[in-house]
Length: 511
Image: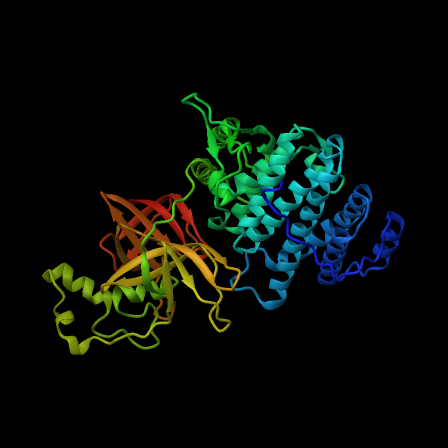
């Protein structure tokens, strides 16, 4: 592993124990219910053991005891940072940092012992290192925190060493993760690499849970290869881009996913045939239709990772949420405090229908400029970036956004939101190319002038209709909806096309 120098451990920390017996005594004295304290204490002792001049076998024993203590603590703090609005509050951010630092340091400590062991004894520390680095990356995905390239490179270091000594498929039981059975190194590595390939930041919290569960079950169906298959039906994926630079010679760089693809296709077919996600061991979190969409996205992204466009620079003003998007498109508030004025979009729509143009819109003195809350983000190689600023509103993705591009309103989605190491927010922007009309949902029953209006966005392209509504709009598939302020008055939603944290997009027919 000379091609990847391992980070040095802190030598300022004194080890609290030097053998298993004293380690157990130390652990017994720790306040197990103080999760944040325990994360810090365990991390400090992992670094102390890593820096100590202990026999490799003893160090591995001690690391195992600390690992066993860390697993339940990790589980107890995940809710503090799992897909919360960004940036995280300081205390939650500290939880995330300690968790990922603990697993990163643990993996490095295991990996550092490997060269000092006989080849026959290297399987366990390599297995534990692969698991630790996978856990560290998953902490980043849970917290929507940008994952450092170092973690990917450390996974490749484990891959190189295990491949060199033909240890990739050696099964080892893991009492700390009994549900994994006898896991092998290749499985942990494939699981981690597949999660990276699907760009987990794009997924909602629930989708991430289901995707992680599915990939964990299929992890050992993959195979690492030094060369791609000549077979045209080969489903091997090049892992080189994850390394960040040229991969050293001899390290397997191809991951064969043919059997995983087959599993995904089988699951989709079973779901369409009426089997439940739970029966297929996908869990209860998502409906069958949502699982079908997710599995399709997983299969596509495993083989065609999202490409970030280059060359886009400048700044963009983003308006968040359906109400603000409605105002951007129509020049009026969706739910104004006072009575709608003559520039009302509903009246304008009627005038256009009757006369072919909106005469009132020609009278510039009648148009009121609406001030809406917005955020200015920078564009960097196709990604949108908001500098670190604790005063800014916290955000989640995927979420509905709007902007004005050369005075033309545009509707889109901010996706893949994550925090960088310096606290900035970054994410991708997707703008809908369809023709967009902004109206509102007409509720059944007698008109109620005091009821708030619900924004509805009708998208049309080549006679294909879709409708974007808030997640809490109470829509049922195959149940007609009435719209106001749009050219189509009635639609019938029949399929969910996409779902974000604040919107759902439905495929529709004219009702």
